[in-house]
Image 1 (cartoon, rainbow, N blue to C red):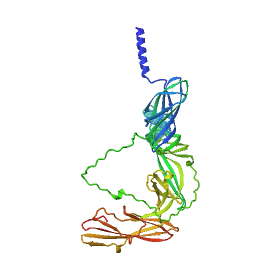
Image 2: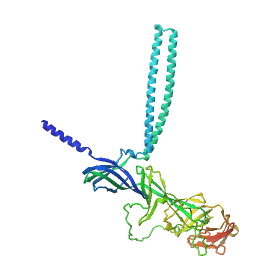
Image 3: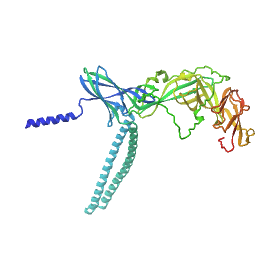
Image 4: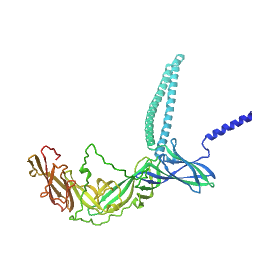
Length: 544
């Protein structure tokens, strides 16, 4: 009977042991060492070191991002250790101590200290309350004892003692209560800050359970690479113009952010303009069958056509900027290597970088390039009387720029922000550097030359505008001026540009835009005229 009970007990013990997690599983914390950041997402490389026994080893690697594309996981080992199996999971309950931010640790330590002070105050309040109770009992006994032989003088001294002592205790109680209120307020603020930090610093962590086969007992370095969507970078630029006779300096920079759940501490950082494919397949055409539609199709020609700031003119005099090199810039761009492969541009940064895991973007300078630019002054007075300073760059595709916002500094003064469109199809890249109030432009309607005539069932209206431009600078400039006339979309509407009074440099008839492009000497004033007529039936109402 005893043997049978012992056997059953051993079976139960064996079942319990098998149900528990493996006691020989080793847990190690990984450290991110490399990060290749794409516009959206990043490829991270973690390393961890573990001492293995000969044969089969169960290893748990912590400290990975909880947001992982499992299909992208790659695991490498040293010392001929084979990876028999692996399983990725998310730990929602704990986080390695070294991955908790220093700010969060300080907050928790501060809460612990203030709670200790609060406990001391509560103890003193309790003691003082008991003392007051004892004093009240003692004074009651003394009062009743006066009937048993206490003289009036002794009774008065006793009453004074109790009064003085109870007053001291009550005052101390008030002070302690005030300190308690202040400490509770501080604790509430600290807890609110901790809650805020916890919302930024997610306590979840990615873990990988590995089954490793080691030929000998040795130390093994495990390298884990994976893709996560919780990171990215945004390009932006600083445009520096010393003067319009000097080259323009284009500093390309980046804002790198990540919310992977842990800080990147001194990692080898690489920025890439590509994004890993998400299962996209190159498209193919299907047959296109035409059929009658039950509603008309309207197209807006102004949307379908494009315009540009200026045009290449044979008669234009192009002033080449004087080649005066800017001072050689020094900075992090000396440690950035740019490489252009088939799919994207890669910026490898030799300096180790630390990127916080709370999503706060870090600014990194990539490279600075100088290039010739043709500076022009541009104005469209019908839309805006401001005169804009443009820098036009030829062969700009050689600069390998990216699209992004740009901060403009002109002659040492911050002018404002513009943007670079790297997807432009124009031969020249036009950058808006700001406005110049020293170029005054005025557009006015000439009433004497703007008339309305009735021709049978039709109306003919003539519009004439005069544009006056004055260069108030003390140097020569190149001015680009634009105006607009309407385009007819119906046979009943006739638009005629009066060429005898309107002399343009370029006329883009498909968009109804004329351009004057001329040089202005210092202090020179010029006038331009635009005249056109519109003939249409009397019953029509036009947006003239």
